[in-house]
Image (cartoon, rainbow, N blue to C red; front, side, top):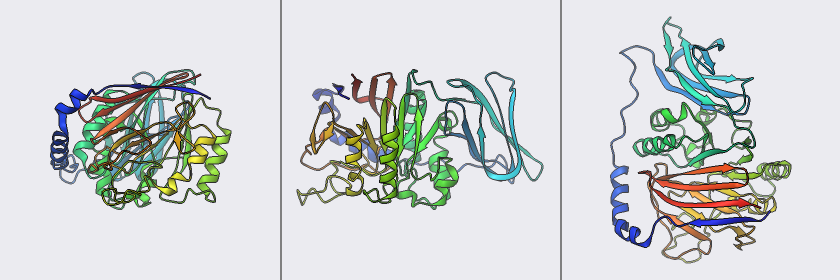
Length: 407
């Protein structure tokens, strides 16, 4: 279906000149070197505590999952309701440290209050503050989602970006992978992902893709409650369908994921279709796919991920998101290996969640439209046939925007 894509010019040449590359480098070095927050301490020496405070998973129109982690085993109770005091309760007697409680038979497009409690094996009780969540909106309702990637080894920047995302009040967060730097290291999950994102994740659900730095470790599967098999899955929100893939594994035409995506895209009747995975099908980066400073014939993207491009074009996927490259890039709409503004697929790299920043090739790629080296996040607003896209830097300044409108 033809679409009109309108470019929004946000930064003028004057502003870019005033900022300068040196300022960007200086700022990124300062934030990279910033002192991370201290580990989460117990309430008092020897006292139990929330290792990970409550966070949300898998919101649908009629359900959501609440998760948290305690320092010692305990029961899992969630009180919730549309008003306070709470009038609904789920109470699980089995003991756990990682608590996962689905709430079902909820009202669509509705705001809820909730609070979690764990009765511990030593007789003590842990209880959270009162928090909020919303069920998924109706198909004709407006909604928004934030996009972030590569929140690895930089809790100061990750926390800053999470705060900016929360200020925008998205309905959910899309994470395009490398949620931590070293998947087997549990301290990184606790102190470098969940702690700096606690305010955001306690009220806004996160839908992750798995990156190479997770190393396919069980922590990914323990901490996220996703549709099986979890490393690839599909979900719906509003009038959009989302398809998540694991490009650490094969996605070539003979693979399980390729065949799954082919079948799922064929079944989708959603107005908007989005796919995301960690590795880029197209990128202007300088050295991940060949050293562009020494050889002009770089691959300009991950060949495994590029195997999916025929499916994206066949089923008219609107936007494909990825991370892996620690920059921001937006392509022109692409189809059949060339720019096609009417029928092409837009590819967005959003790898600015905290990992050390990278750079672009010295010569422009044929597909590049917008580039930026900075920590950042993206925000997508959708209502009916209109999509509004914005990208913000680590200080909340808008630096890129565009619209899509379906005819």
